[in-house]
Length: 402
Ligand code: HSE
Image 1 (cartoon, helix red, strand yellow):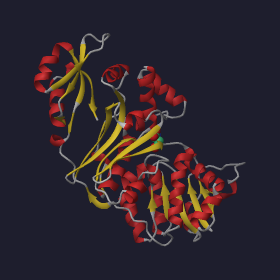
Image 2 (image 1 turned 180 degrees about the vertical axis):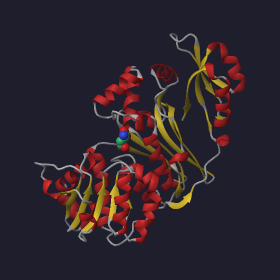
Image 3 (image 1 turned 90 degrees about the vertical axis):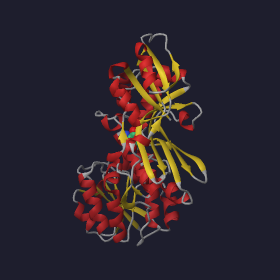
């Protein structure tokens, strides 16, 4: 019997229990043993729940039970989640999690503790929910130098941007709707300001580059400035606007950014709509690969966690290696980070802006006759921000091109 402890019995934790129960036959075949939830750690009780008698409120019960092989950290937050994960790994209990905040902040340390204690720290569910991405990245793409990752990594904002694109809604209205449907939190900051996508691209890039890509150093912009008019321009440019997490390996240095991007109809990411996620990974031999699916939700996320449980069960007493060294990656300096920009400028200032930053094309919207949209040449972030600061009052909005 493989005994599992669930830390947290919210949406994801209860999803894990559900999959372990419903797919018990498949799991016992794949693990060559039965998998059973022995404990559920939560502050709450769950009267009437089929697992109510497994609920405990004290982590030491789990820590001190030698039968526990694997724990699922589905508590959310950082403090206790990190503390309990560390304590369990130190006792040779493997931990599987969807908690990207803990992985992005402490992943490399927890991997080291797992290795020292002959167990594993796995976090397939922390990026892309149910999409298989981390294991394919480290195993199936193991022959590759990963040149770039470009992902729609946040379902909430992709839902909002898709609505704005397809139905011409304004940001505030679409946010309210996303909250009413339970996609966006009452405090939506983590999603709409890009923090969630930032942690996910940091985790992906750390695995791809083999060194820590510190999420704190990833330039992050959210979607709060994106409005209906930006989509009018995007349509004229045969694009949609998507919040992307993007990273590139440029001669061993990392270029990483989270921001809204103009995504052309030619890109496979253009068709990733609603709450879905899509992640393109480019290897130097295989070329482009695309991973697509539900990036959030109870059973999708829980499915990725249970796949990690299967991995741990089949590697008892061993550490599943992760190519993420305890060494900080070097970032590409801003002078070398180059993008083409779409910039909405006051019409009367077009000439002085064109003189400062090369303009390839312009686009107009009839109802917005005091401004004009320009497509810039490829320029560095330094040059762009110099221009932006110089002509602050002339710039209505901007979005980079993918
Ligand atoms: N808030 C996240 C999203 C949940 O919308 O994608 C999954 O990490």
